[in-house]
Length: 349
Image (cartoon, rainbow, N blue to C red):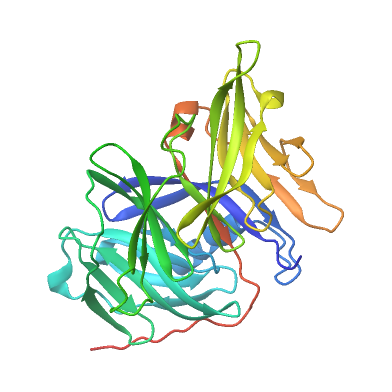
């Protein structure tokens, strides 16, 4: 199956210009290409410790689907793009001093061909909803804008997902409907659909958990659980999974019963396997559950396990506060198939 190295972390939002990714929940490693001997989280931690004298001032603020991380050093508002495994790190051009104002860090949008990163854009969002963008291709910061095709009462900028040159985040309309905002930072400026707002597919239902997205095999994915009344009048939990294709949600898993793991709703969806959309993960009390949707198998993992092909699934302890987990965001980080350096254009002015 190729490279199978990934991690899922709890991603906490602490400040308008800083997002912390602190707790590694689960990791796969021992891949064909990279052959890692330890988890991605430990590589990130050791990279930050070696690279920065004051470890606490430098934080990973964004992951990409192609193995790059964005690091923010708060003390001087500087940014770095890095591959923490190969240890390539590029400090990008500092922000112009007049732009040290309040901003949200959205993340990195990447231009990829045949699995190789050809370029990236670091994207910040200013309060007037204009983008401040650093391009690896020009080595410069520039201002840009997008026409948002919707009205909203709030947007969740703290956990955008980077995928296929776009950044995706959640927003809420005045009638309290949830939808996904997608901005393509590599689209031609004349293209009218550069920015899209896609409503979630289950707005007519009441989900168990707050809506959020994940990724698998290059697609934006969404899963949630609903209570369905059985013939005997009791409620049964059902899992549904959708995949976003051509800006429409396609139902790929319909109402899989979760009765086998139901225990006072004491389970939290973490995400979908980045390489296998038929495998999903839940946190249940003090251990990880993986569910094979093909075969209906549920497996509990409470420690490190090595599979027959030499890969390792490493599970870490989640915080015991269920409400804390419910309110957290989860981010996945996946190493690419390629091992080439990424572009490092920096222009000093």
